[in-house]
Structure formats: structure tokens, C-alpha cells
Length: 416
Image 1 (tube, rainbow, N blue to C red):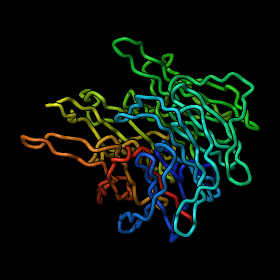
Image 2 (image 1 turned 180 degrees about the horizontal axis):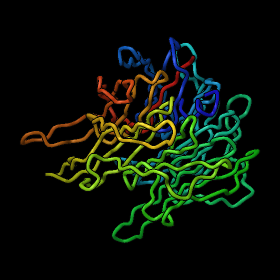
Image 3 (image 1 turned 45 degrees about the vertical axis):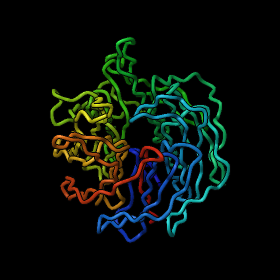
Image 4 (image 1 turned 180 degrees about the vertical axis):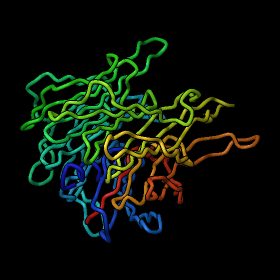
């Protein structure tokens, strides 16, 4: 969290986003995962691929996302009482917050440092600039972005009034600051039997002294058939890697010296094992580029169900991590693996600072067909070892009780 790459990669959901860290060491690594309003702390044993549960804090509403301060002294957690069914928000809610916690460097415990900052709508994603001066929040409905100055005490203040009318697209899903630019990823929405498709776009803003100004809107095909969810940056090359939720694709855009992106992707890759035969409800999820820039990981997720004798039962689909090797010169991604996840709807995953473990978090349990009856696949945390060639090997899973709410966010923090 000390520079752009650290702030980008230190915690993810999924990245969120964002996570990277210094190689090495014996510094303690803490893993946090949410279930509804509860944020649970685990100590991570990287060598043994084991999570040891330690404690939990309770937020004022269901956790949406979290992001650390570059100093590693604070963790910011967004929450909302939005009603979610599966991965879809079905009621907007009336209570929305960002809570600031002080992080104990010795054991990772969290202590609130002041009153929660109240927001006007659901903060679906939050992040902090590389200098630690500003917190950004993205809102999906209505689509919007806000900027909050962080005080010397680590607390973010009220939203800074923006002097310019901003192009914030439809259904913002992620906001990231990089250099002197801010990027808002807006997913759009698929068409329904009664409504046309809402176009998606990647919105770029110049940023100075708390003020945003429109820089660019990237929307191939006028945004139709373009549904970006999350993006991540290459640590050295001028490329941005984008998870296309609605298209089940990985798209790569090149970054120009002024911060603008190429208007069309320079590379496009399918994410599924069988892109032609995907099941209903199949989407892509979070994305993370490895700290060394050699690999990019994207989640495929499906939580679609059908009613069988009054019970909601999975209709199948792919739940896995698609692994791509990145060419060191061209930035081109090449698919090398689909690592299956023994759970459904992985909405968040993270990579530890040493680059040895990837941890997935599924949102909720799922009923599945088993023989002539039904069985429950629990919500879980899945631990995968990362080999030198970037491929994943399943190590173990930890079943999670999600009766208090879905697992929406998880991330790691190394105090070295």
C-alpha cells in the first residue's frame, strides 16, 4: 500500500481488487472475509495453506467492499442494508456507510476510529489513491462516483462537491485511481423481455485536488455488448486487463502516455471452457494480475437455479478461475488453465503477498443434484497453491456459515 502497485494489489475483491506486496517474508499475513455485516479476521499460514480464525467485528450493515490505507494503519469498509438475492440487489436499502478501522500491526485486529461516514446510496466498491489522500466510492444504482478527502486522523470526510458534470455511465461497479487519473468501470445491463440493453463503458477522469473532469469514455460498439465489471493494471507494461462480466471475456486495453486507453481492446480472450455452450446465469467476476505481472486470474461464476419441488436447485455452469500467462513484451494473455472451485458464485478472491496462495470466497450455499436426491454444497473459502508456472492446485476448503449474510468481500494484508 506504499505505492501505486501496493495500493492496487494489497487487498482484493477482486479486485479488487486490488492486491500486491513485497516478496518475502516472515511478516504476518492477515486475511479478512465478510458474511453479511460480520468481518472475520484469520491468520494465514502460507506454508501450510491454512486459515486460523481469530476474531470478528460487526459493521452497521452488510459489507460491500474494503480497501486499506497505504500506511497499513487503516482499513476502510463499505456497508449497506441493500437486500441481495444471490448476487443481485433486489431492494436498494436506506443505510449506507464507510467505516474506518485501525489495524493492529501485531495481530490484525480491527478497532473503529470514529463514527461511520454516511453515504446516499449503496457503495458497491471503494478504493484509496496511492498517496493515501483520497477515498473513492462507486455506486451502482444510480450510477455515480464520489471523492472524499482523508484527514490526518485517517477518517474520510464528506463527499467533495464536484464542479463539473461527470459522465458516470450506467451501473458503476468499480473505481480505481492510478497516477493522475481515476477510472470508473460501468457494467451496463443486459436486455430483458421488457427493457432494452443498457450500454456499458469504462469512464476515465483527470483528477487534481479532489476534482474530477471527464477525460474519455471507452465503449466499443457504443457500449452494446460491452459489460465490464472489474479491471486491474499490469505493474510494468502499459496494459489494463478487464473482466467482461456480461460477455464472459478477458479484454486488454493499452494505456497511452496521457492516461487514456485505446478505444478498442488490443486482445480479447474467452473465459469459459466452452464459450458456445454456457449455461444461463453464467458471468465473469473479479480479476487480479499477479504482482510480478506474469499472470492474470479471472473468476467464472454461476449461481442460477431452477425450482424443483419448491426448492431452488443449481442448473449447473462453470465456477472456476481462468488462468492466463502474460507475454512479457506484448502483454498478450494466453489461457493455461481452468481451476475448478468446489463452490458456487465466487464473487471475490485474493492472492497472498508472497504469490504462493490464491483464496476464493463463494457467496452462499447451493442445492445440487446428487444421485436421485439433492445435496448442499456449502459456501466456503477455497485455498489454492500457486505454482511457479502460475497454475493453481486446490489445497483445501473451509466451510462458512452464511446465515448472517453472503460472502461479498475478502482480502489479505501483509504487515511487512
